[in-house]
Amino acid sequence: QGHEFRFGPCQVEGVALPRLWEAFQTMKDTVQAQDNITSVRLLRREVLQNVSGAESCHLTHDLLKFYLNTVFKNYHSKIAELKMLPSLSSLANNFLFIVSKLQPSNHESLSVSDSAHRRFLLFKRAFKQLEIEAALTKAFGEVDILLTWMGKFYR
Amino acid sequence: DGVAALPAPQNLSVHSINMKHLLIWSPVVLPEEKVYYSVEYQGEYESLYTSDIWIPSKWCSRTEGPECDVTDDITATVPYSLRVRAILGSQTSAWSILEQPFNRNSTILTPPGMEISKDGFHLVIELEDLGPQFQFLVAYWRREPDTKEHAKVVRRGGIPVHLETMEPGALYCVKAQALVKAIGRNSAFSQTKCVEVQGEALPL
Amino acid sequence: HIAEDSSKLLQHVKFQSSNFENILMWDSEPDSIPGTVYSVDYKTYGEPQWLAKAGCQRITRKSCNLTMETGNLTEFYYARVTAVSSGGLSATKMTERFNSLQHTTIKPPDVTCVPKVRSIQMIVHPTLTPVYDGDGHQLTLEEIFQNLFYRLELHINHTYQMHLGGNQREYEFSGLTPDTEFLGSIVILVPTWSKESAPYVCRVKTLPDRTWT
Image (tube, rainbow over all chains, first blue to last red; front, side):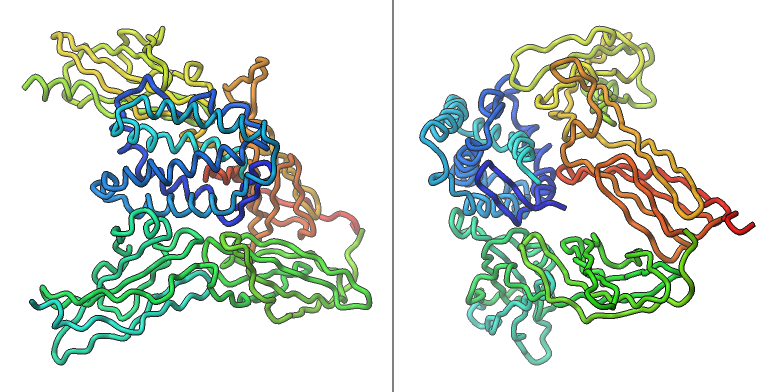
């Protein structure tokens, strides 16, 4: 059983990816069923494909911060209605732990962080183009895309 | 109104051993009355981003107490706040909040229980079943001058597992420690136990 | 009344995936109207258009193989079925969002157990999948899942087990008693995805020791 992420130079121990999947699986079908815009994907190929190890630390930091500050925070009441708070709590607190361990700034050159930040802005722009409720529902429903991508850096 | 009349539970603390976290408190004692308790928790995320939100504990939304196994509520290695209140009929007390947030990385890890046996030339070990979060590092060696220590990871306890095929006429010694990757810590080693093998050498 | 009848036409539209063989399945109520035909289309999540699945238009069976159409491991898909009864009643239902990496289950490995006098050798054969990479190379489970590994157990007279594990092909349990029966059990594990196959089981007897005869 691993428990370690290696996002390029950034290493995070103590988070079991299968537990994150377990937490999200209990919410996934309910939340994704409420996303009727099947022709828009926020975490598109251009955001996540061919991300270098060095970039991955920056990009993970930006994405998880966004999920904590914006998506989970503003979707919290909906999850509470659905009586799924324990699952969201487990996911959010583990994301918080990961972010607290990621130190992207002092590792890489400017071009790497810029490239990662451009990818993040692609995602954020797509998010902002949608009406807020629809955007929150879609972003929350795409946590499986995020976890699938994070799985590539899991040992 | 009746809320203030019911005293709140006192002396909250968490006893955590081998990743089993038990919240305990002093019971509210009222003659001829049956008092129940309700436990809620907040992870660091909730306290930072949605501080008004508390989540009912999985096993103790209404319990006879005065304790609650919060192991299934604590699912990340971050500080968790816990609170308890008393319930009597329709009355509820004020909430009592754990003074210091609890982080599971402070759990006490004890050396694992270990039994060794032999079956012919097979050295067999059975380790204490401490749950899915635990693996074990087992060290074993032949007791003889400048011997080499071998190590093996055993993935789970509770079942007897072959450790080594022994040479006849030698004394083999074993010790084990528990590993918890979720918090990046391990226990001290257990006591060493040894077993000897009679008989001649195996035909080549 | 019509809504109630049309829901009878079509139920439980979902993917069943095993070793990346992705089959769309659905049901109708037992007493639903005979002569109903079904048409399947599918789409990639994030793309605008639905595509009709050739070979699954106006069919009467209740399954459709969408393995090739849903074979990109980084993509997410929807499929939907439209049922039309002989009386002209129709119903359309969509699957949940599907990704084969997430949803596929793993079949037991293919293993050869070879008994010797004091040991048993186990050879695990690679498992080919219907997934191809960009160069047209057919991928095995081992190539798809980076941290796939095998867990091998040998059960010894119901009292204890020998364990071996790893991602190589060949394993050998040694130091065994000749002319004795053992039960071997081999599973595939993919920890990142919490996937575990059912076990391949072999019951095998070590050879008699004829050294001194």
